[in-house]
Image (tube, rainbow, N blue to C red; front, top):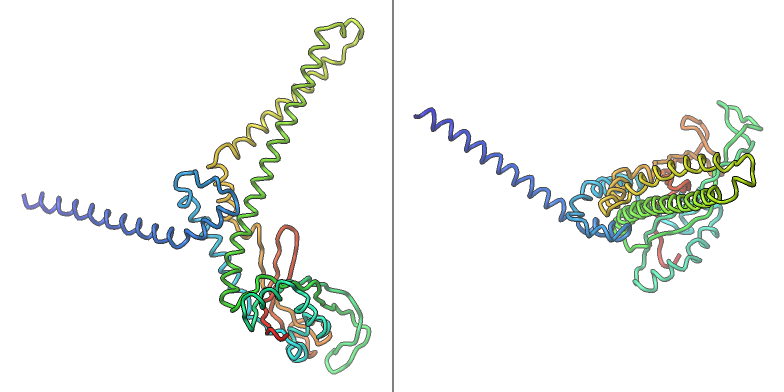
Length: 334
């Protein structure tokens, strides 16, 4: 009898432990969901709001949104601290000197941006933090360079320059700017999901139009075959044309079935969004970029004896476009 009681205690103890574990996992899941709820809703708003009609849509998107959010956080960790932009920095800071050809170019970038003027006028901040994006250009040239202790002329060199400076997302602090960037990266990925959905819609519409045209052509050819056309043409080519059109129609209908399956229900729309957010690096690639440059913008190798400065940037690549990014700060007076 004692053995039976011990066995029952082990069974009930195991069941209780299992129930506690399940309860703890459920609570943890609900905490994760609550923490990401606002982000999930922003993603849904930017992609396909109708998926809110799908049961438990937030839970179904949770892991994908967490993956995208973690990726965005990792990207932001690669961003060096904000660089101060002002006239003195251009002459003293090698990074600022590399970004702008002249101090006037720096000043023009700051003064001609209407969003910055609006930021200072509306929010009353004395300092602005922003993301600056630029286009990097490398030009081959020839100049003098040190080879050991000797100055050698006509050495092949790569000159690096930056242009098309643009400032984005002005904020009152670097912390606010980084939070804004993280949210905007998630919205960016959501819009990529929407574009993917629109491409699938367009493909489906195109296939439906192709099917209608093929069906109309087949009806016309079959009508001719039932009339006097066979009497007028000793060798009726319509038979071969009908066979060719029928073969094309079969292929189009097969492709159309596959296209409709990809977006047949709102669950399919949700799945498209989930796939994009689960693979953020496919749609937004961010890489650290370190350059060693002379004061004149000549690119140096890491072991070059020539005097130069190392600057740290990030390179963004999305939709075939590449930009160089850096966080910057500047005062109202600039």
